[in-house]
Length: 235
Image 1 (cartoon, rainbow, N blue to C red):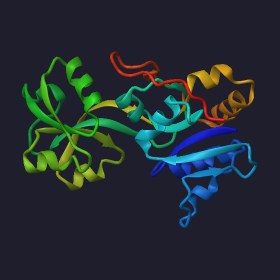
Image 2 (tube, rainbow, N blue to C red; image 1 turned 90 degrees about the vertical axis):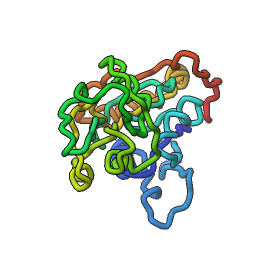
Image 3 (cartoon, helix red, strand yellow; image 1 turned 90 degrees about the horizontal axis):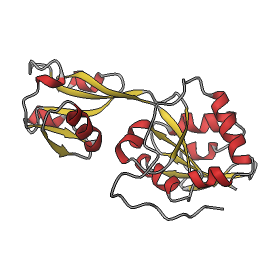
Image 4 (cartoon, rainbow, N blue to C red; image 1 turned 180 degrees about the horizontal axis):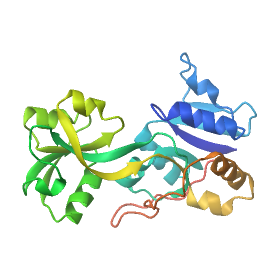
């Protein structure tokens, strides 16, 4: 049986719709009264795990799910050893540097060296500012990073931006984009290699339904000095 890890939140509805179009009905996950975290498809050939967005590549990397749907931002931030298979095209947003509109900063290189930058995505932020050769002090926040510049704790933030409305309503503006993010179908590399057809057939059906262009590169190997998950394939 194929196991798929699906993220709670904004990607769930589109993920369920896309799998339904590919022949797997996980619509019970959208039922407001549903409390099950693992459900079988109506046809009985697959099951879905309902997990937090950041945990999707973890379940896939450790083999408890052969496939998963997760934002490209999560893949960039956590850099787990999963295979990126298809850009599904929905859930579009961008990872951006934002500052107070009144600050006068209009590009990232305008920020002073060693300034403070708040973010939930500190790996992405660190890589970006390192590429600019601009040393900054990163502050990890779990949410409401917009408060960093508002309270004066940080000069800037790095965060996901969809419409920009939240930034605007809090007196902030995005000054540069790190990258664009959409939902990606990821797979467990060993499961893909050992597949005798059904798994790849599902991937092909999902790819045929996707309007997106070929995927941008994403980490598919372990980060140096990070632990490599042991091989365990869900059955």
